[in-house]
Amino acid sequence: MILRAVLASALLAFQIAAILYARTAPTRYFCWAPFDMQTDFEATAIVQGRELTPSEIRARYRRPHKGSDNRSAQHVFDMFEQTERRYHAGDPARITIRYRVNGKEWSTWQYPRP
Image (cartoon, rainbow, N blue to C red):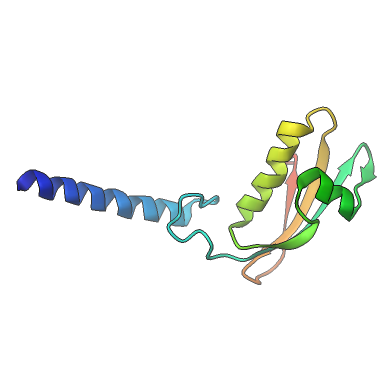
């Protein structure tokens, strides 16, 4: 009986700690409510000194150059950055993403980071 209470309390404490961590982490991959943010973004990419067109951005990153995502901004950044690291190490791009979360002020993210 006591062992069950201890195990149940430990499980509950772990869940509370995981939720608190997920609510403060930038990626929020394991958050119990991951779709509670709206991120609007506009991406530009420069490869070998030439800015990519919107259709080239879509082909390279499989994402539109301008759009919305219902997850944290870090998810959008991760998608662009992972594509660069995995598939385009030989022809790296300079990426600039203007974004805003939940309709607030616009911010800028860059890859590679300055």
